[in-house]
View (cartoon, rainbow, N blue to C red):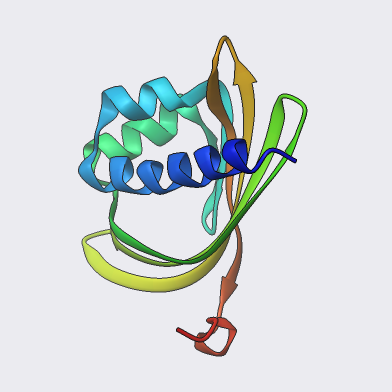
Length: 131
């Protein structure tokens, strides 16, 4: 496996959390595959709905502390696994949760495009790795 490509994906994933926090719609639009799927604790939806929800602030990702991240690349596809503490505003209420997040990417026309983002599992504080 190419460590450079893995590092590129890890950095792209970190940027994605910041773009979501900043509501950077051009960067997110460029990153997300038009047919990407997003699975949250409350349901699943596509790219257009995810972007609309972020832009409107219905879910405002304020900050993500990434505790662990790894990337696996096979050909032109990749999986990035994160353990994050996510600070968000949902329904007008600020919430903080520890999640395991799975991201899928495809390399298309010279760039990585996100195919899916899934909040795979909500974790407990005991699941958090030591600092």
